[in-house]
Amino acid sequence: MENELLFEMQNAFPMTERPFKAVAEKLNTTEEEVLNLVQKLKDNKIIRQTSAIFDTKRLGYKSSLVAFKVDEAKIDQAAEIINAHPGVSHNYLRNHDYNIWFTMAVAPDSKLGLEKTIEILKERTGAEDAIILPTLKMFKISVKMDTTGKRAKKEKLKKLAHKEIELTPGHIAVIKELQKDIEVTQEPFKKAAEKLDLSYEQFFEIAQELKESGVMRRFATILNHRKAGFGANAMSVWAVPEEKGEEIGREMAEFSAVSHCYLRPSYPNWPYNLFAMVHAKTQEECDTLIEEMAKESGLTEYGKLYSTVEFKKQRLVYFDDAFKAWEETV
Image 1 (cartoon, one colour):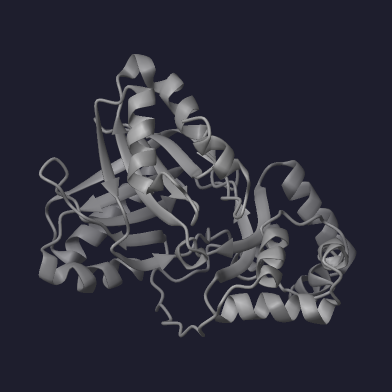
Image 2 (cartoon, rainbow, N blue to C red):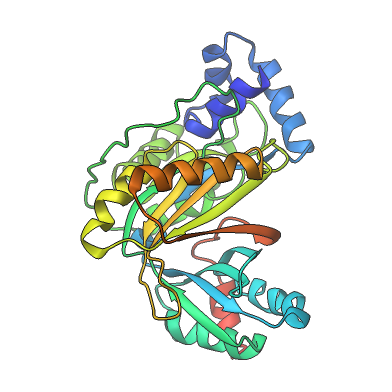
């Protein structure tokens, strides 16, 4: 049942008074058994977090993927400097001359802005070069590990229509609570609703508004990939002719093993403009999938960047004073 539970919670965690009971009913078991199993999976660090996943851009944050070329002797120190910024959620060492790869976001009220912040980090780390790779077009962002082995190799992606929303202080208060990792209890949303002096009905109504507007992508469980048995992840990078970028991007995004797929800018020192993150149990499986993607797309100029060290991986904490505090150090 463990694998079915993990797959279920990754897909969509129910936003109800007693979500673990709803999961238990779907899996034909008891709420108590689900609670015990989830706690065990958390204790074993297989479940990393269960919380809301928000759209950084829709919250007014500016973000980008960034690659630094850092001297081998300075890597650990550079990673520490980069990790200290609250807008860095992911930071990896990868097998390339551009060896430190991180995602960077700055708050809507940032005085420095994205480019200046990256420039300061480049200076502080002593990086020899930097590439800024913002998203030009997103085809997919959905981290769901196939713990059951029953998932089809490809999946059709749904195009979602979103309602317009103007975020109020009430929305922001709920966002601050929904971004926290839930407790493994019968009523994990109870404390948040009580803290905000909202009924369950009001709390879930605001959460639904955030979802319908696309501000909240989904509420789900994120796994520690390696501990869940997915020991390899490769950032496959592709040089795609501009006129074929969208077509090939959509095709690659349909592979179930692809969690993220984006079009990004290319540069004279970086010819790759399509990025597809591939997850598998072994590097051999990853390589096979990427070769298949190459064959289907007809692309011949591509690379595979494997992460060798995970320096940082956590959710961004939105509307956090830490952003302002970091800028005051400059």
